[in-house]
Picture 1: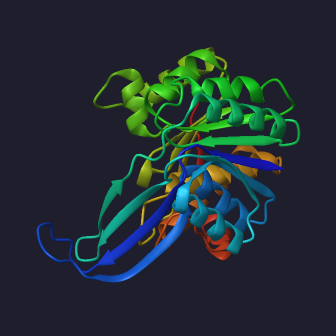
Picture 2: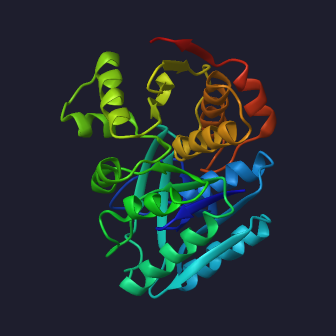
Picture 3: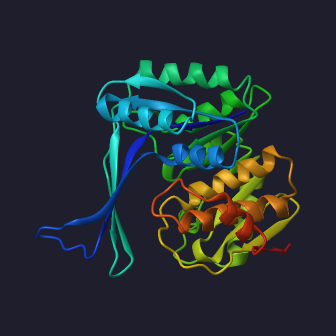
Length: 311
């Protein structure tokens, strides 16, 4: 079993417009409304790939009810902690003339100390039966800054592995105060950690060695169109993606996380796991919204990913 935890779930709404013009009326050509938040996107991809999963996190108000309804309509099991307020709406405007994406993200509900205690209890319970627990996305208002570190320490008490995909202070807290099995920062987040505006491949390798010294076994750095680097304490790999006609880049990192956890769950080699992860990210880029791939695209693209052992 794999469980994904999304503390700041969302209704992901995607509008496709011929042109996005601010200060005037815009007409939508097509739209999509999906259950979202990074961990939910991971779960949707895993479900498509045939993996048994459960979705959890916080859900609030009408939007929370709709998120649960949409997950049920996809036959994706879920168990949410109900909180006061409203789950957020994340709006993406896709300008078809320029292929530019504009994201407008709401904040989400305010979490009480009791809400936090409840999610900690739930994570402890599911860690007894889930082989992997994926922690993804931002923390909602009033969650402790070291919230992910706390959850990872709970997960590590059992025969379960924590996979973390977040940024900013929650990522730094997790790095310094817990030992996740895997983290997936992107290039921007590595720059923040290093305090540099530009990073080279050697900078990334150096950063990974520092992170390994903190007890993190596996690190995958997503590099957008340049694929991904993957580091263990002993080896470093670079996966180069195939050339594709990109439709949408939102959620590609989440799809990559889904491929990573699926590869580890199925006991694939690191090269096979990385090929699957990059293929999932690329397959998501071929779809009109986040958290969607076609299995035949994943299988085809997986064979086109080039994995180089660079260290």
